[in-house]
Image 1: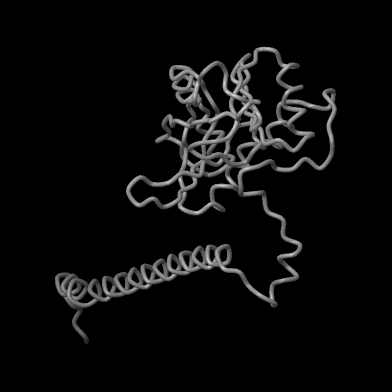
Image 2 (image 1 turned 180 degrees about the vertical axis):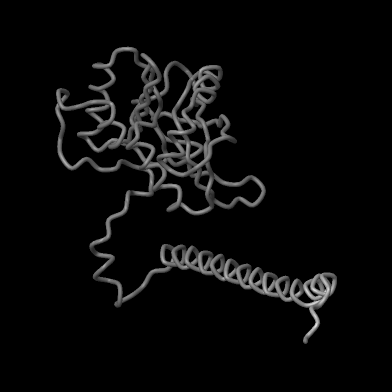
Length: 254
């Protein structure tokens, strides 16, 4: 009759043979999963690069038919052109915002005026809208700011300095435009700011929100911004937002 092995023999057998095999199998599977994750990351990065290259490269005959039908928001200083003339009865703040200037620079022709009467600022903006004059309107409580490129400076001022709030920065224009359009559709008065880095003199495109003639007003608006709403609209965090200066030169009057 075959003698049964003692219990200690079974324990030794598990420790010496079975556990190393299980450990080897788990280690091999873990390495496999890590490699799969790396491959997935590389594919995502490659996709992003391809999308950027598509925006920066101009294809010739093979894509000409597609590009003819592709309409992007204007990226130069100017209006997002209105498709029809409006009357004062048809206007509201959202319509004026969505049809206003999409981009400003550190120094801009024209000036900003402050209004406390809604109808008055709407009439001023309506004139700009129907006459193809670049403008930007911003409401903060019962206070309205209206930039128009045909406004002159008041008094003997040689330039006008206002504050805005920078929430994000890009090194190419297209990635800045689409979040800006999403913010505007959500009622947030955003525009693209085309500036230059001081050291390299290279262009950058930042997303700015609002215009303020008072620093404390700008700071209060900055602190009270709805971070969750901005994230829902754009997927961007604005925890590092800060105030930024912007100049207006006015226009010469006869």
